Image 1 (tube, rainbow over the protein chains, first blue to last red):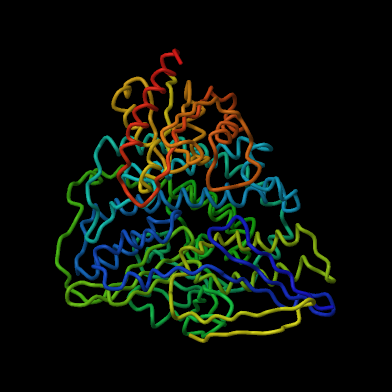
Image 2 (cartoon, chains in turn green, yellow):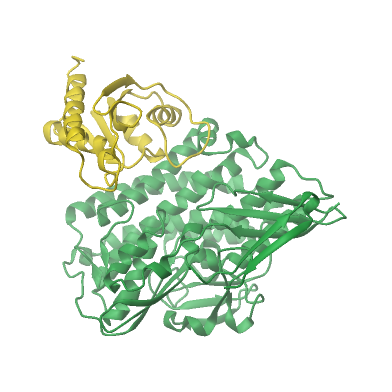
Length: 475
Length: 146
């Protein structure tokens, strides 16, 4: 008999979501959907605010990656000012962004996913959390906490606060780096590298205990999208976008952020507050693509720092390239964490990092600005239009989780189809459906933000999954 | 060398919920050379490192279950959190610290009763007085004369 399984809420993700899995009369999965059940409103309630307030307002979208929104928003405001910010301002923003990626990835790997990886996907759910990990493997919890703390401390040393620092502003940053703070940051890095070396060694073996998950966690051909430095090296702050196909061939390169309406489309689904982005030239849904750590590593030839490059080489030797299974998002995160610490070290060793020239001043010179950067979860875009007084008239945000929405939905269907068979399912099978979503590390607080435009459908299902009533709103 | 750690926590944008912060600020001014002081919105797992290295930990918080102005002091009872959450209680943080870093230091929680938590960055006069009394209680604890 047909039945419907609902996982509500999906746990150990950032934000609120549920999953519905439809099972047909023959006991096989016929459909699975990820429903994002929370709604924000940032694009609407920032209207008529002065553009220079946007970085601080937009940072409030998220408590995990406020720095990403600060940076993308400030870059959009730089474009409205029409200024090139001083080189050291860009350098300091880069360091801040890398520190945030470090702490956010640590949160994803250790706090959210390590319970599955260390304790097992079938372990008792009442133990499947960071404290359960600490009980079984205190050294893993210790390193995870330390790595997140190092990222947060660097954000605090630069920005004044761990969460919602107001240091990144239109035109640059509000104050230069002092030698004392530079030394304090540098002193944290050896500890971070040591913890990462231990972590990568440890997890390399752990990942190999999950061959079925490697095969079935959103493992399919898709496009990949992300920023590069133009020469095939990892880039998170500024650069053109690249789109690659599942066989690694480059479909488009040198894509400018401000041209995004020419190559990115978005559709609203009936059953979710999260829009789905797609690559416009291939249409919907064929233009499905992935962003974030997995995509970034698929798009580059190398990371550009020795430890990260070594580990990327080892991963490619083991799993091939490009990496198609989303299970490898976890390993990709560890490689990016190595890269973040190494790159911060390189940037801090530049003598110009203490330069006092960190901000360009101007009145608004343009009525429109687009800012793009790589956030922990993928490419982040802020687009604003202002009136002649610099008041925001319109805003559009495309967030990493929205880019990944089509792939996440296809991923849960693949995972559910494999682990739920003949109408029978265990708690561990349902946890795997959640775990494939965790692999993407979605941030739903970030990615649902439009108000007043989203279609909504409410289905009333009776016993046995029979549809009794349906109410829909198209806009 | 390890030193006493004072952690004042609460939301400084919610009027008297800033009580723990304010008391911590007072202690930072008076005793800053001999103690470490931290002010935060909530207790998170990342604090285990600081906690594990302290000689003594004193948590300062506001409480709506006490009479306004009443002060309560208790020893922390270590406990292991039963489920993941965005925040920990002092007992859970100390328990988690022991789980991750080994034997945890002795710890106290001092709470002051409040009944005002509107949107405000200023505390009421009663809460200001309570913060002074909490700071004095901490100083007595630090001097071993409580």
